[in-house]
Length: 320
Image (cartoon, rainbow, N blue to C red; front, top):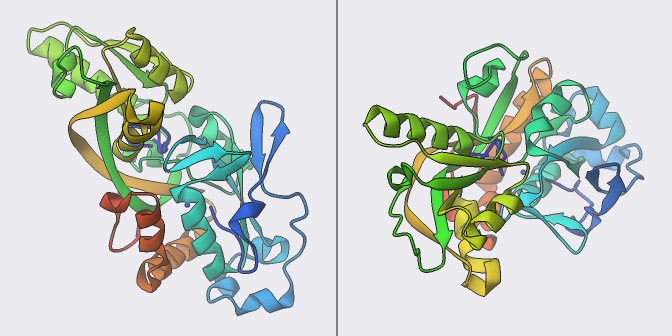
């Protein structure tokens, strides 16, 4: 998610895919401790007929045999990914479905906390992570916000472009015009996201300019941050631009929030892949380029009102 952890930093995000013969409706959720799983349990072996998918033969043998790529996500970032009637839906699941048709496999989504996605990926719980995760050098190299090494990092296959946006209660009662107006004010945000980092960066700019720091309230999930803004406990919230726009359009039938100012610090969302899994990373890049070329990528973005984030070509580790 952008200064939305992919995720929100992640993303959120805050790309899912059915195999060539699957349908999006199979992305069902089942309880699993404090996680939410998407997809039926009967993945099974890939039949010989699926080898007709254009990029099937380029997949690592593991995925050709299982017919499944396991995806970690945080399904709280509509329109990128969210839960509707027990199913994970959105831009990422639909893009992944299109990718699955190129690869001949099924992408099965599991929803958990955003700030745990990369750890879960590198410990083998997921094969990839897709959750509006902003591709940046910090995540590529496994560093914390202070530059301390936390792990080996991940590689990204970039597929979308988004920046950070500020949203307020409908009517903007505090007259917030941009992120710069948050000096000395209280702002709500999801913990572990790139937009939390954007708020910290802005807070430093405030103090360096002789103003008061931003009073940052960080929450485990974005729903809590939204609730704080709606209740008046924070004058604004910060999120990925497409997520903020969707929130303003839908929450309370469009009566709860509004986006103020322009998006800032636009950067790529990427599919996160373990650095040791270069074969999967490279074929995913080919698959993203393929769906851009055949038009299915643009259809997904148009469906969810996210066309402003379209890219012309996939990249590996394109984030700065």
